[in-house]
Image (tube, rainbow, N blue to C red; front, side, top):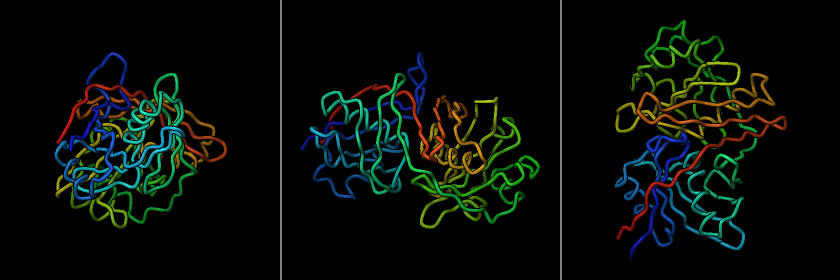
Length: 282
């Protein structure tokens, strides 16, 4: 049978049609097996593709699955926002939707600039690796990693979040896949590392690195890691903070992510969602 899909740019920048993180959303994935969804995600070869496996238009509730070309993700930010955009339209142009995925039920709300998701207070734990080991994994000198600047944080997907001393250090990262595997791997997942630095009182520049088939890749815009950054900031005493995060310039996909850390511990991540195409697969 034919399956409809849409292509969207999430965390896009106004006026730039090739900004943000590309996403493929299958509008109706009922009947597709796990193997089918993995195969279609590999076919499109984007950082993630999402699949709507159940939709209740009356309540704007949907079940979704998210796959990279290599594995399923329990939660990911840009697929959640992009899929919310599609589900809201399919449900009659709604302003709020709820998406259920392996990591839980996520509320997503339309904003003036796009869409925003909310997650409960992320949990964190210490990083056992030393500054020197983390720096080597990122291809940097140890002095460029901020003291006590690394934590494991989980807002749905656990990742190591590393604060660097300067934006130049962020831009200089040249990660090593083997060192990432040793020092930046959460149980049951490939290595992920989110490196960031302040660029102003309310602005941050970040990069997300991960490995796939032994190679280091970089994600243009990572909502799950941005939510984890919110957990890092809260653990550092920065509740009640709103910042703008820049990501993706190094891979030719400049992106803007809006991050809010609320007083109650919840974290919100938002950005623009732009639909750029649609089609049918058989």
